[in-house]
Image 1 (cartoon, rainbow, N blue to C red):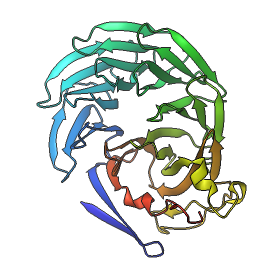
Image 2: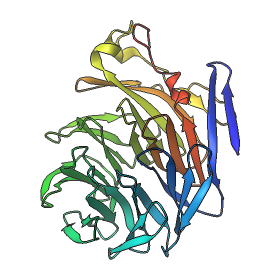
Image 3: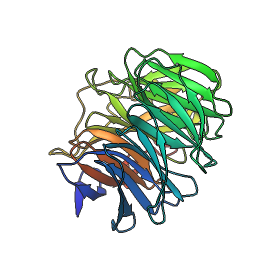
Length: 362
């Protein structure tokens, strides 16, 4: 099934492939294999696998007894991890779906992530802990217990030395992977933190929280650099974050929309004919009855963050709550897991049209 959304004003022809659609089921998470050929999604109590090129369904991984909240591929693509409300993490052989290990928490598992070298798995849980596991045999390495409320998201730094965890205790915590030591606690949110992600160059750590809060932290010392205005209104929660592989696009899941921000060198955007603090009306809406319209909120679309500039390119109005998102390894696709029981793929052309070019006014 394919749907074409055409915007005649900007000549955007954006292909949306529906990989899965069943309103009676829950889709909570999505992940691409390292070669970009397979897409995994947590659908109810199972993990579904599709071939990305043509949307062909490959197999279903059965074994969980509650909703699969998070899925992840190992860097070599050979192992899939899934975390579930049944209080377990399961490790599967990607090639044939064989269950290899069952790892146990004492409450629902909300997030799983592989280290860049594929040797360690991190899992976060409603039991307020983060656990580190040895992938090859499922051995428990460390249990990190400093959070005082449920852990909602875990992410490894690109160099694999630091693990970030987000929690409903309104903090993000940074841990040393080698021994599980707490390195730093990042405070400043006024509500539960739902998601966290490192930029590919390890310069930034981004967290998403309630009240549409997106905070950008400096990884080296934990300094809060900026709180982005997400245009979502204070009633919404940022439930998903993803950087494109080249680090130039940051995707935010805010309610039933996805906001796409370009990250560029400060020098590049300052070449614009307009001063940074006067650029408005940059965001455009795609989808729904009015594919493109001016947002009522006139908040500034450019933010200076250290030596980079964050520019809001466009907003994809999805029409259903965005639970999770992931970029393909080549950055050409964005996968979404939606609350109405769908998994969607978007082509990069949908936002590339709005990216400013060198020497052109943005």
